[in-house]
Amino acid sequence: MNVLGHLAVGIGYNINDDMMGQNPINDKSGVKHMGISKYPFITTKIKQGKIRNVIEEARKREGIAIADYPKEMLETSTDDELISEISSKEEAQFEYLGCILCGDAKQINEITGKFQLYN
Image (cartoon, rainbow, N blue to C red; front, side):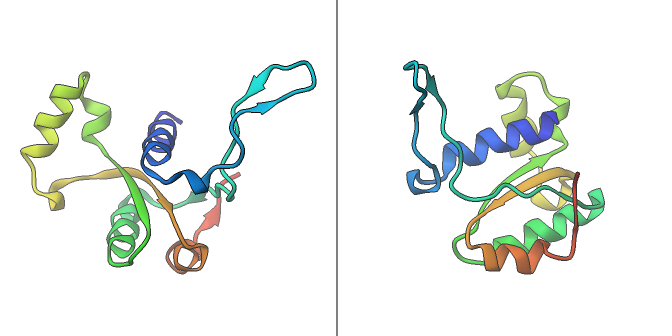
């Protein structure tokens, strides 16, 4: 859940405004509630070793935003440590713990459609 939380914040920060629904949404009493994405958020089950394949395939396609979560993000305590760890390694050295893809549903389904839904 920690990985998913960090990924969601990262992708949310880096996508454009037209991905979001109305924000804020005011209830009848005037309390403001944060809006959500206009598009579905589908979580799938995938073996950890296959995450790299998903990321590599998504990188080949135009218009797909990718938030990836290498293991170093879990093993470091500060932003400076994380920057140092990631910048000192080649991409092929990373073990990915998760990723979020955002973009054209057809393209993403071509990459992830074979995976079982997480429930």
